[in-house]
Length: 145
Image (cartoon, rainbow, N blue to C red; front, side):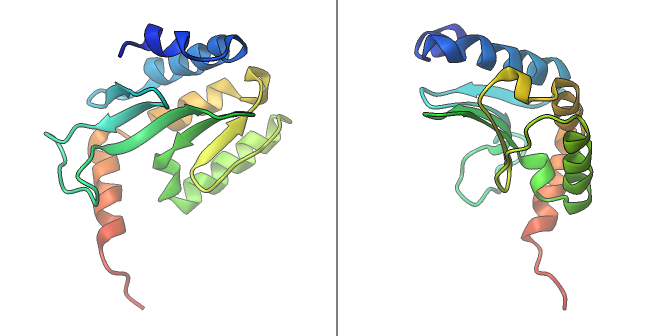
């Protein structure tokens, strides 16, 4: 499936919003990640050829864009495993005055104006593939008490 085919399957009011966020992601995404498109979402992953030791045998997901019924979710997995960076992201996001609606690893938005696109781009650009793989590996290690 191409991205254009994916867009055609979205409600009209979501198409421009999803396309704009994808543009930011693609523009700021470090080299080495690959885009995958399914009917439900668009993902940017570490290819299995680069890192195959995942818990589910699927590529390690770095960013995903998933339209839901009432909003769009932008998953930023690079922030999930880095509490200090996640806290800085939250501080910077709130400082913009935009609506801050998040889950553990995602930002939810109903309008493109809800997103600080520069900050999103910075979060996407923050980890190259090697850095993200190292983060995933560190998360698998048992924690010492």
